[in-house]
Image (cartoon, rainbow, N blue to C red):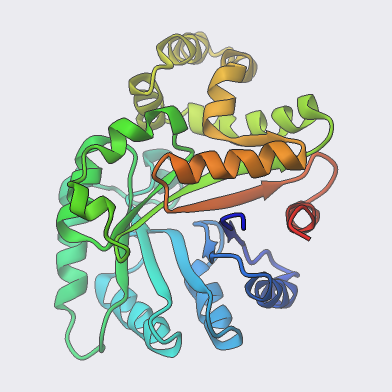
Length: 301
């Protein structure tokens, strides 16, 4: 039997009820989880899914820590934890400076802010039990912090070839601990036209190439030339050139694209890399999110 991944779901305006119905179908098909991205109110989505499902793991992947105060977060997270009978994973992250600036938020140092947030969250009185806290991770220091203070960690757009190094930051007993969550959000596009599918994923990840933390991570993962070329294009304000700097080798290491067989084989490779819960972020070469999810579900029929 193939190992089934989790699926990322966003509650887009106008399709929220349909998204809840889709979540019920995803559970019935035996997928390992449903995770809401930072787009939209993923906590509200998880609360709704918790009431309409009974077994599937649900979680945020991720919620930025600066958008609400810890007391508010603690009450909501504990509520979802209780009504889901412990199926909820509270994925949190420090986000990125450009996104925070758009919200008028000034952040401090990521490691310090995350440590303080988790401490403040756990200190909120009279909320009941909290769910497992999962930290958004990319680089080594945040991975080690997740091991120290959290119940798991989740990458987004991680490089599969670099996972041996990244997961090597954890003690062996933590990697093998079934209660310690290790996930990765993987942009995925299924199409017989592999070139078209690759173009979709390249477009998806281009915005991340503008973020210094991602570029530094991908440099560490062995993509120094690609990131050097990206930085040169940014410095020269030749922004349209950035996608051309992102090689097929890099794209194949950070995303899944191609035929149904290639995508299924790629998911197996992600499991083998040590990612316990690959989280598929579907896109379509010919349609929107709902079509992308339908295309992904179809390959398991």
